[in-house]
Amino acid sequence: MNQIMSNQNSSFYALLIGVNYYFPNRLSNGSSYKSLKGCVRDINQVEDFLNQLATGPNKIVKLTASNPENNEPVEPPEQLPTYENIVKSFQYITQIANPGDRIYIHYFTAKLGNFFCFTRNSRTGDGYKTSFSLSS
Image 1 (tube, rainbow, N blue to C red):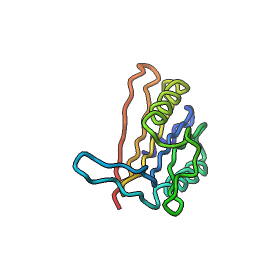
Image 2: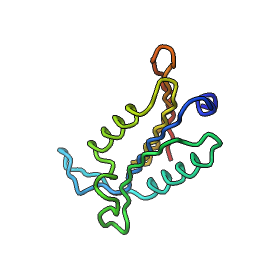
Image 3: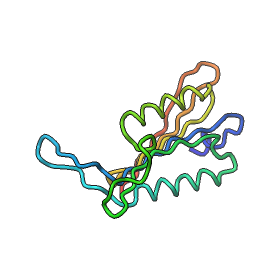
């Protein structure tokens, strides 16, 4: 990961997604997702860490759904981690990124954090991904 993160000749973009609040839901088997705590806090800490790097991100896109005392999230609808907003964020980052740029994606929810580093070869445009999973 250090090799990917230290390439100073490229731009660096990050997409950070943290989900604490699950809107009321019912799955086909009768179960539901319960809201969580800590995912948005962790994403905020990742954002702080990235901003402290010598080659910090040129642009951070952050989608979060906080859960303040089991009420509705405080974020405006366009900043919630809905399917539509996540797809729009991927499209936005891929439109502004160039071959050779670094794209970091960190998704935190359901007691599991996943993050990805993605870069494209500046000559061929081919991409490669390094992924990591963290469980609590």
